[in-house]
Length: 141
Image (cartoon, rainbow, N blue to C red):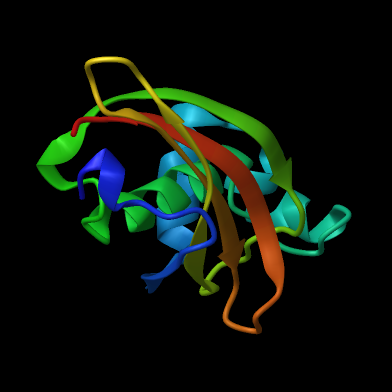
């Protein structure tokens, strides 16, 4: 979509993706090797009683789902920021997550499209909010 095609208040729903125990452990071993993500026995004794996905994985998967929806397409120039990132509820093995993206701001740039800001809200299979972030990107016209 071109910058001028976005409208504040529009919503877009992504597909969902399921995170297996292996997905969680493999990601965490590389990017966030804390016990609650990689050590099942120790995680069972922890606050959540189970392995949980890294917040970084939840954020990455949310972004992946948004991008795969195809709204940016070839018109995206670059990401410009993420703000107000909140990890609200843990994502457990076999949870299915999906994203609701709402256009919350449009900032035209002289001679070159503008900045589109979307609020990504990620839900699990029980429609419980697990993550939110404001994502901004420069989009051409």
